[in-house]
Amino acid sequence: MKKNGFTTSILHSDRRSPIEHGAVHKPMHTASEYGYEDARELAAVFQGKAGFTYARQGTPTTTALEAKITGMEGGVSSVSFATGMAALSAIFGTLLRAGDHLVSSQFIFGNTTSLLGTMAALGVEVTFVDATDAEQVRAALRPNTRMVFVETVANPGTQVADLRGIGALCKQHNLVYVIDNTLTSPWMFRGIDVGAALVMNSLSKYIGGHGHALGGSVTDTGLYDWSGYAAIHDAYKKGPPTGWGLLQIKKKGLRDMGGTLAAEPAHRIAVGAETLALRMRQHCNNALALARFLQGHDGVSKVYYPGLEGHPQHERAKDLFGGRYGALMGVELVDGIDCFEFLNRLEVVILATHLGDTRTLALPAAHTIYYEMGPARRAQMGIADSFLRISVGIEDEADLLGDFDQALHACLKA
Ligand SMILES: *Cc1c(COP(=O)(O)O)cnc(C)c1O
Image 1 (cartoon, rainbow, N blue to C red):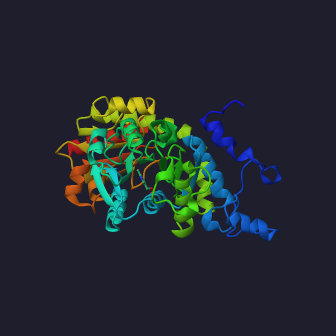
Image 2: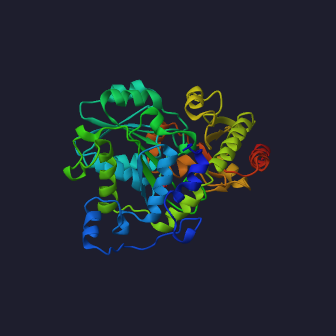
Image 3: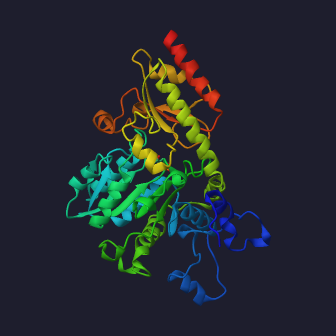
């Protein structure tokens, strides 16, 4: 059978098995528990047969969403979680033990930095490096290094990790390569293409896309052989060793830690995912237009966006993401303009945290989402006090550019 394209595959994924009453859209299953006619069948499902028992470990609704994500990422299977942070907690918390070493990019989401601090307090050794250079990752490796973690395009500094170089390095040293694909989404980039073992997505962002539901996922690319990985419990050494890691993440992350995605948000995210490709095109086009416009504006001193030729990893981004550059950018204004004053003059743009919404959102990063980490860590991540994070939405381009222009002019005149 001919392999369908990106959007067709998502739209028709549910129909691979029959839907009740011939419904065209998959219904939402909100039951907490699942009953069986035969006690042996119930026991079999507890012992590993595919099926449902208690909703903490998944429902037909989360399974349907997971199938869509697996398809988008070109992976083998996926597990969904209540949030992106629950997905990351499950990866680090179930696969790393005290005494293991993790190498992480220093350019990562603030809450992930904080989570890795929690892991360090539990005895996991964590080293932060500049992951735009695979050699820095190599230099940080130790005999007890188990895992390397990077974001594709860093939130919010937009640094682009050396995704291919790090993939080759992880393969050479048999390390678990984990990529947070949130800012690019599987429409722009797939971790499997650079050798990732696990790909994490915050479904709250582009995949859901509408700002009405939180969720996270981990996709197993099937590339990593877990047979030599010490932290896998005997109970999860079932089936091919390439699947052991995700089984442990699912069992411990959902059943033990309980970070389960409920049916209602899972359903909303699945509906949102159907338009991922349509939305991403508009997000990316708007962002590139806005970045170019701001770069040439009198009121702006610096724009951080991988689509601009002056961005340090522009060529790499072009190669990795097929000529699309995402929709997150950083902006610094000229000295005379107070960034709070500027933000308050925006009319279309909403002053709010979050990214990947259909609406354009902006906030002063150092004073909000990166406030808690303090100035030294912010400097390491390349976030100046005046850094504005902008998540570009899908509004009409002229309205967006016009809004930034009017706010900048008003500030320049003041
Ligand atoms: C938002 C985000 C997360 C966390 O996702 P939530 O769904 O908000 O928990 C993780 N990584 C990146 C890059 C993000 O932008």
